[in-house]
Amino acid sequence: MKIILLGAPGAGKGTVAKLLTDFDGSVQISTGDILRAAVKEGTDLGKEAKAYMDRGDLVPDSLIMKIMEARLREDDCRNGFILDGFPRTIPQAQALKELLKKLDVRLDMAVNLDVPKDVILDRLTTRRTCSNPDCQAIYNIKSNPPTPEGTCKKCGSPVIQRDDETEDAIMNRLQTYNDKTAPLISFYEKKGLLKNILSLSSVDTVEEIKKHLAVEGVD
Ligand code: ADP
Ligand code: ZN
Image: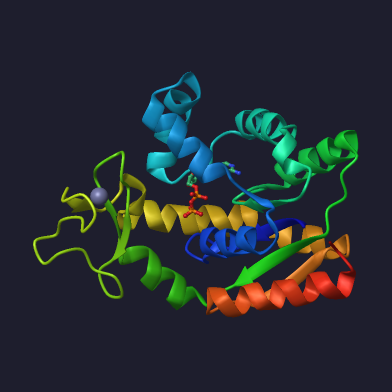
């Protein structure tokens, strides 16, 4: 499959993408994961991206397109890909269209994971992350808490609120989503590529995506 996952921060794009790779071997491409790995390794890309990410701002389109062009040219993308967190702006979507044309690749669909605002806010504010850079296990203080001492169950390091998970940064990420990313829904709708899914359970959402793919005759 060759699909885009759209949705607000906290909509569950990453979880859905991972479940879909198990289904048909398509690769998950998460710009957020690529950027966090670059920050961790301290590469030039990581140094440039970090300040934007900590504030909850978007990294500049030019930087993202450089990353994505290199990534989509890799061999493992031939069998299919699930784009998670990209495109995030209209200029990125336009650049992606040109890039796919150049690579002679046709997109199957853009899936919008529609999640009510209160659910999103609750998920984002209760998320916690292991502070050990080699672990980064994700917790949720309500549904999947760390130890009572606030340490990681896997590695014992303190579990913290990431810089981009403070209340200010979360509000900024949601505002940025509304201003810059939500317009992509009608962008793909106009192209006849959009599937809107009310997404409260990742497992149900994955089943629905598979159904749509079957109808469209995608392999
Ligand atoms: P979330 O969806 O939870 O906000 P991601 O893991 O997708 O988080 O992204 C984390 C951060 O990485 C974003 O807040 C942004 O700074 C940056 N980022 C990720 N993808 C993009 C993109 N396509 N364009 C610009 N910035 C991006
Ligand atoms: Zn840990």
